[in-house]
Length: 262
Image (cartoon, rainbow, N blue to C red):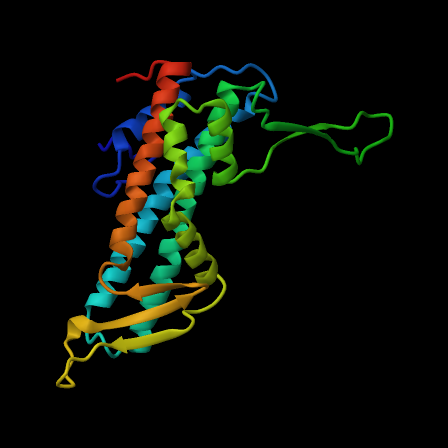
């Protein structure tokens, strides 16, 4: 039996399943004891964000494969409606799930910072909500987590955990590829493939080769060239960043909170 079957799917080649699973197992074994509410929320929230990394990454890899297969099939100059649909939907899925990978990882890392430095990184907000019951009964206390994104998580690590591998890994938010990724996802999530042009480079004799044919998308102020490497190269970058984040989380938990079983 695949030891991951009870909580995790088979992952694409290269995904750091070993250390990823070790972190999940460490939390499940109750090695992080945070007492009563509201601190008990944090390990649960960490696991929630951590588990989503694997689902989103596998989905992203599958969208990449579907896109690449569609681009490589048939005539590059003529796309029928079904092929166009596969390409468009795969690009939407690829950029959406890829962004989800890094946002989920960053969220988990933010919660981990709250566990490590609860006084410096207060993540739990207490709110009093009016009771709908009789006035004689006290209003219930509701605990919520602060909102965050990868950029704010980077800022927290830079300020409070700057000497860690996790802080270095979170520097991906400064990378132009991350900013481009978000811009592409934002455009594709709200409209069909816009401003799509076929560009054919010709030689002096007026001939062209298939390799020179490319479709180009104008997305925001950037251009996305549609060819067999469009998602493959970006997936490789995503895997590298994700691996660094997972390794950073592993080191923090292993060194600061509990010895992860090996």
